[in-house]
Image 1 (cartoon, rainbow, N blue to C red):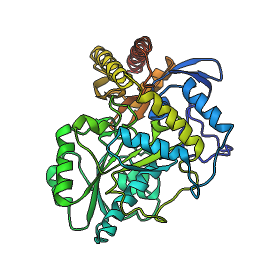
Image 2 (tube, helix red, strand yellow):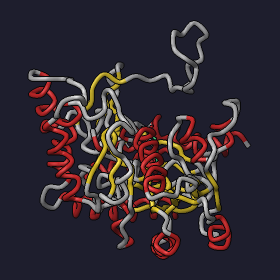
Image 3 (cartoon, rainbow, N blue to C red):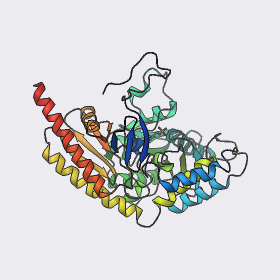
Image 4 (tube, rainbow, N blue to C red):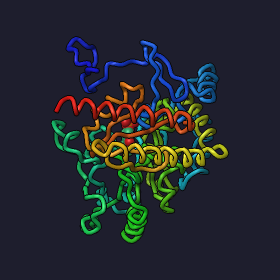
Length: 402
Ligand SMILES: *Cc1c(COP(=O)(O)O)cnc(C)c1O
């Protein structure tokens, strides 16, 4: 299917869109405007953690919509306090700040880390160490944090204060820590970079380095959080705790909401007047996110993610073995999986779509599988079968072309 590049479109040309639109969704299925059914294993890029039209969150949105949508953070918003308490109980955090997106959650994390040192009498500590292959969002500060030239090009001088090192290069990391360093920021499992896990030992080493140098450890769990890896936040697998973390994507399961989580100590510089958001944490967002948490933190839910994730990973490994010319290896955790491809990842995602399976490409020539966390075994079997057919079709078209 061709991308829509029509010059009379009223929209910015920022997206290379697939010429496909959907009318409705049912659990893991998306139904296109032409009636075709697709198995949704991209989930709005790790957003639709409960699939589409999940009755519990639909009900929460409807009920709240009839009461109150928005008031402003000038007033108390009881839903914020309730959701904040729930997030604090489920994580390392003591307190939270709500925004509307992932990038805003990262911006808040960066501001919180810098402001912490400022309030401790070390205003020179502003620099944040980040890692190659990272993705932290598309605002001016977050593209500088991510450091990817393709996102920085043409947008003027990059926001200052970020030092980027190679993932796993301990020597470079230690050399990058200086008297102006405020924090280390990392995704415990890189998403856009190509489902690149950070080894447990490395996360523990980062925690130790932060403690040793008085730095804050900031985790970007926007994609890896909300149960995606089978734990509520992915860093729990490593048995460490950060000082600050950004969570978004799955938090609203499709309703735009993000959050910056922090310990009381790390957030101590964020006093009245230092930060704000017009829409952040409005009653609609709080009602939906609260309902999402009801489900994800419910009995046995994360066990289900671990179990189905393992099952999917095993079945994908068999597919990889069957198509060694096209795909190389499966990696990731829980239901945040990637297949490293030999053929172009875009070709494989396109072929899968032709078979009615939606995947999404990532860096390092990877296709990601980010199904709803509610996915069942029958749908996993169906997806794997469709992927197998898609890979066979790619093989055949390659053979025909040569
Ligand atoms: C998606 C993502 C972001 C940006 O989130 P937006 O809601 O698009 O601003 C930041 N960090 C990570 C790890 C992400 O996956």
